[in-house]
View 1 (spheres, rainbow, N blue to C red):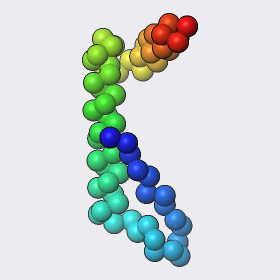
View 2: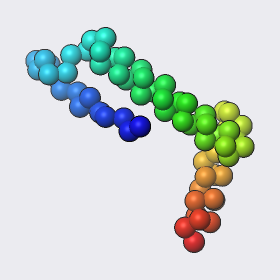
View 3: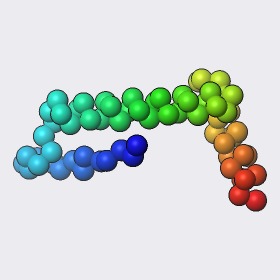
View 4: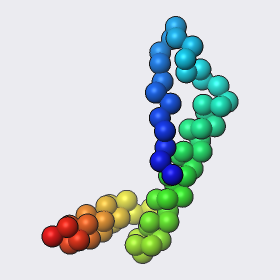
Length: 67
């Protein structure tokens, strides 16, 4: 599911209050992204905290697919 931005507006506007509803929306989006990233790492066989390895693996395989 795609994350819909809150599109924060600075004070004095009250269009985007910093409240439980908006904070929970952000928390949920962060959690869903974390789950998606973890799932991709598992699928690709990349260690959990090896960002550079995951980035390299994805880069190489995406380019192999494109070319």
